[in-house]
Length: 193
Image (cartoon, rainbow, N blue to C red; front, side, top):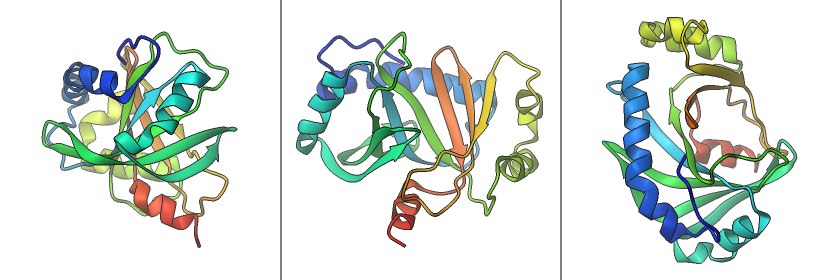
């Protein structure tokens, strides 16, 4: 995550993008997943101030289009299709997750995590974990919590979503990489079924 001064704008998010990329790429190397052919469906930011979230939402036309606005874990989360893709090494990122603030306060505002797609029909975290370990066995000690990397398994779901998307989150030093089976576009499409 990168420090942002208020008011938070997409312009100063872009300014901090290279630093965030270096941290994510370093973390991917530490996880030993950088050579796996993941697709990155979106990047997320963290915001503490409602005024910053509203400013980004009100100015979204400058950098993208809102394609979903949903309540997840009791707060609004927007998914924005970016006008111009972001690049993180060989990964192309077309979507931004803009969560409105919750009661939790983050030490820093700004970029927080990326979400990678591991194609699977898993409907729960254990199945996803088992399949991920078959593909990338070096993750075993990390998933078994034998390292300093924090692992969280969850199945976040928006009020309208119909497709389970179990998620494994790897976190260290305010940087997070999440892995799940379905692209954000597929999840959003499930809202309309």
